Image (cartoon, rainbow, N blue to C red; front, top):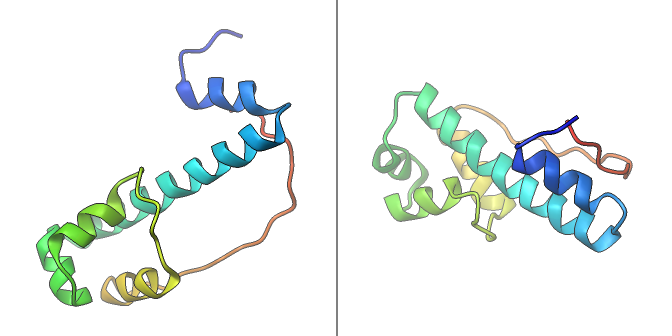
Length: 102
C-alpha cells in the first residue's frame, strides 16, 4: 500500500536498523510530549504565558516544551506542568517491538 505519511515511511525504513529505530522512537516521544502539553493547555483555555505563570517559569520555556524538536524535557518540569494543568505524569515501560507502519 502506497502512503505519503512521513511517519509511516520512516517507521518502515527504520524497522530493520536498531539505531534508526531507536532514533525514530526518541523523536516520536518528543513529539508526543510536546503535543500532549499543547493539547492540555489549549483544553484548559490557557495561553503559553498563563501556563508559564502557573508553572513559575517563562512563556519561552512553555514554547520549548511544546516544540516537537525540544530535547530537554525533565521529569521535574513535566510534573510542574502537570500540576498546573491539574493532571499527573504517567510513565510506562513497554517491551521493544519492531516498528510497524500505521
